[in-house]
Length: 54
Image 1 (cartoon, rainbow, N blue to C red):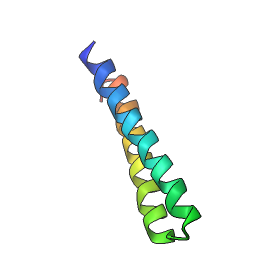
Image 2: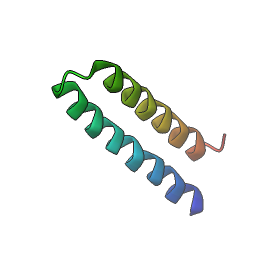
Image 3: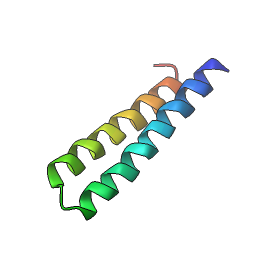
Image 4: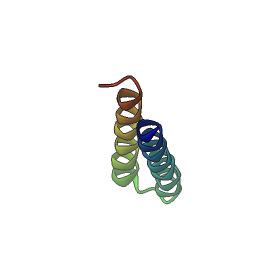
């Protein structure tokens, strides 16, 4: 069960990054938008890899 909780935590963090990236985009802060988007992708991938045991 711990793996599921860890993966869910990564997904929640990714969702928070996407929300913040959306706000940064609205404020025309494009470099920060890109950085947050990249972090969201990395966290999502990390969650996926944890779920399959890698």
